[in-house]
Length: 227
Image (tube, rainbow, N blue to C red; front, top):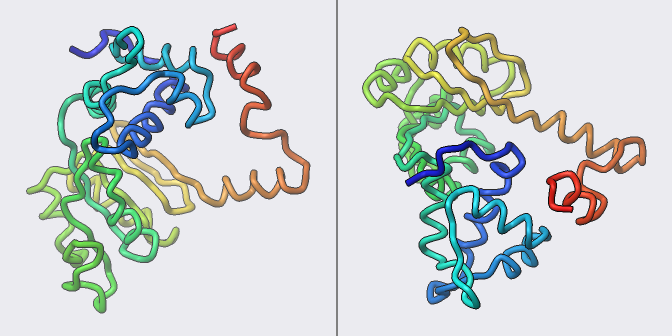
C-alpha cells in the first residue's frame, strides 16, 4: 500500500537516485543499509532513512533493507503502481538517445512510438523503433492514448508538434525544445531547458554564481530538518 501522504519535492528528486543505485547492485545482493546507500550517493544516512521511510520502507536490524522489496516500493511510489506510455517526436541525436535510454522502464514508462518529419528517417529503425511519419501522429496517438508526449525537435517546430499532441489528447508534455509552449489550462508542460543549465554552469565557472549544490552535508541536513 502506498503511503497516504505526499513526499517533499526534494525527497521526490532523490528517489530516482535510489532506484538507479539499486539497479546497479549485483544480482545476488539481498540487503543494503542506508549507510551504504548514503556513502555511494554522497548523502547523509539519516536523510536516506527519512526518504525511504516516506515511501513505507522498513529495514531489518543489522541487515538493512531487502533490495528487491525496497526497489518495488520506490518504483511503485514513483509510477503509481501502473505502467505509463509515451510517444517521442524528433529522432535527431537527442531523440535517439532518449528513445534508447533503458531507464524509462525503471519508472514504469514505455515509449510506444517515435515520429519525425525527415523522410530519410521515416520507415527506418532507430533505437529499436520504426520511425513514423508526422501524418500518423494524431491518429496513432488517439489509438495508443499515451500519457506523455516527448518533444525533441528544433525550437521553431516545437509549438506545432505540441499542438498536434494536444489535438490527439495528450495532456502531459515533456519539452526538450528551447522555447516556451502555449498550451490549454488542462495540459501540463515540463521543460528541460539545457540552455538555461549551461548559462548557470558558465556563471559558476566564472565565479559569478553561487554553487547550485550544497556546500556541505551539514548544511543540507539543516535545510532538510535533520539537525
